[in-house]
Image 1 (cartoon, rainbow, N blue to C red):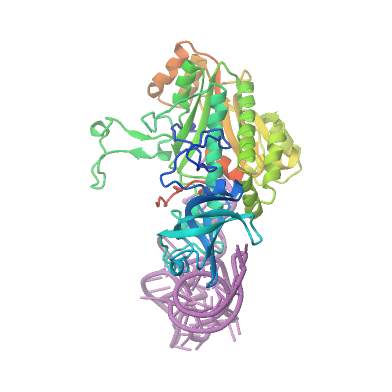
Image 2 (image 1 turned 135 degrees about the vertical axis):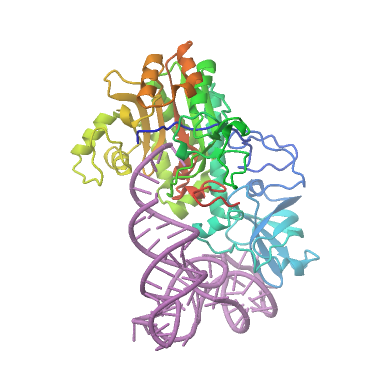
Length: 501
RNA sequence: UCCCCUGUAGCUCAAUCGGUAGAGCGCCGGACUGUUAAUCCGUAGGUUGCUGGUUCGAGCCCAGCCGGGGGAGCCA
């Protein structure tokens, strides 16, 4: 699209910590798979199941807590499959009828109950698991009324689970998805931090007015229900303010001071998009580099996506294998292929030529000057090159005002990274650092120059070549997990007409 | 926002030509000396998304609305 505007993304933070694997014993200092320190104390002195499953049988007393996935058994012995979210697997707890005083209570345990178990880790007598817990005490921390608890042992559809998003993280699928999401977020920070990039917290509330007004969420403290005309001057900030649609412009201000920076946080788009690839609230990562051109930008993008996928492959093996078995038989092969591939780099003009010569009958024309459609992007990356493709030097008229104008007068230094199956995963550009060129473009597009005075001053005072890109976190999680719908890779999806939980 | 599909028990689904709603699983009760989505027996469970219309009769046909899904556009 051309016309209006499009910036990119956002900011923010959040504490990434352990989550993946267990901690447990009060003085453990083992690194988790992502290098962050483990939490070393548990309020109730439990050992995480991830750690128990790695341990050897022992006479030492152990204690675990978690939620019961299934209960089986007879009058003499019951088996509880207990999961605490520390890993995909559940651990089997064996409760003999004479081993605990409250066996009658144990027999009333149903799926979803929370339990506190004490016992010993022993070699399993049964098949299907190598170790299990022989219980000496079972305490029910919280019952889950059988007839009311919506999760069953049997599988549910993703559509149904979306309606109970408060409980779906207790399923194998969503446990795996959100552990992977965490690992990706952690890998993103570590990639940039290890390269000396500074994390910048760009604002969520912003008055910068350079995107299409219809696409933004407006923020006000005024009660508009009465139908009175909106008066910005008397509103909280004294002017119209909205939720950020991109932290890029603010990111550029910091890149032209601190050198290499990135933003990582939530972003909001009020577009009425109803697709498996769009959310009204999503997270974006936006690196921005001073003293960098488009080639350097492409290099970083390629290194970046490979690095974070590599990290997840090495740290989330069991979760990925589960997701592969359940949702995408080619998942691991696809991810390994991305990591091993050298991304193809072509210009937009070359892409148009390839598409024209392809002999394919596309629904949309492949005319120079038109943006590439999803079908075109997929043909390039899936059919023709069969690996990720970076397309650069797009026509200026279909790209944003801040992209650097090439010498041919027709194209700009933009680049999109195209992935098999999901199309564009990254969009970026070298920025227009020449004040006169930037001002000319802004005027050409009818944007109010005054609202961007602060942005333009970076070009007035010590301007330098710089470049950056944006990556949608959820689309990345989608690609890495094989989940088809973006609503299943964010805890509580916000979409048109839906903001539950 | 546009196009298409869809809505029946807690869940997944069935119900011939329009003839008065069923199964599996789950839940609940019982049986079973180690189970693996355990197994076996039994009970309960429904205003067929909502509103209106056509008809002797509507889960089924028609209209509107609401929810869900897919595709498109837009993007990340």
